[in-house]
Amino acid sequence: MTTGPLVESGALPALGRESTRELVRELLNAATSGHTGLLRVSGEPGGDLHFRLGHIVTVDSPGAPGVRELLSRPGRSCAGAADMRVVVLMAALDGAFAITAGWVAGCSWHDLPEPAGQPDTCEPGVEPARLLLETDRRLTALAHGRVSPHRNHLVLTDSGRAVLSGPGSELEAPGSAQRQEILLWVNGRRSCRDIAMLLCRSLYAVTVEVVRMLDADLIGIAAPERAQPPAAETAHSGAARSMLPRRHRGASGINDTLPPRPPQPATRGYQRTAIVRKSERTP
Image 1 (spheres, rainbow, N blue to C red):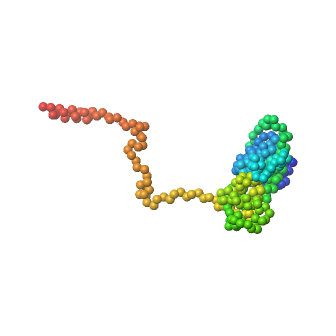
Image 2 (cartoon, rainbow, N blue to C red):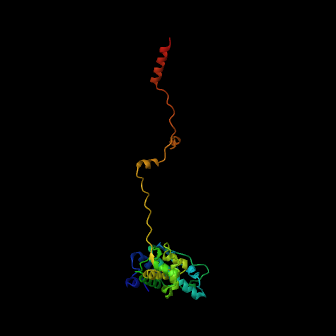
Image 3 (tube, one colour):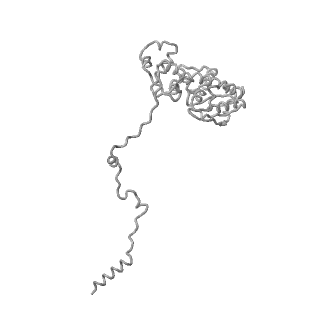
């Protein structure tokens, strides 16, 4: 798929904003030219997309769990190469979602040499067009979700605390186990990204479940922390003046930098007056 039709046809409405257009253009151009290297996306959270012959092999972002974190989830097993490719694909799609769901400042290419002893065909990777289409679908699905995966911190509501305190219809619904393990980590200081890292789960999967729990009034979004106001000034200027440090003679050290002038000799007029007065006392 070429760059023009995918962009101009409006197939990527969620990725059509100005901040992500450069990223979309670089991905599709890399696919066309068969580029090998690393595309670094600056921003919040940002990330790195590793290309080999025009295909995206891995996507690393501090905003989403990587392959190692996904493999370390309790109960997950990787039986062979096929399972590993599935996990790598999950991590790549999740990393791309994390990057584009945040703030994209720019992109820059960094050419990397081929890993020694590793053939090009060891990991086929994912086509940039496929990654972009899936990322756009995820962003569109969460466009009205009322939560940012990275910025918003989550708090429990009374209903959410009631769900955790005892059995109920909420815990018997499909997906209740995944819902409960998310609720256990909600404390007012964690975001979807933080919980996904703790659970070694996909950021997108956690965000989708959080949106559902927001709609069910099980959790809420914490109010942003306000900066502390400056300390109030004292009412009386005398009290404020008394708090100032007292000055001591010589404390400034000016005499060490500019030593005081030596005593000057007496003037001629003073000497003449002294001589005259001495002569008057002489008999």
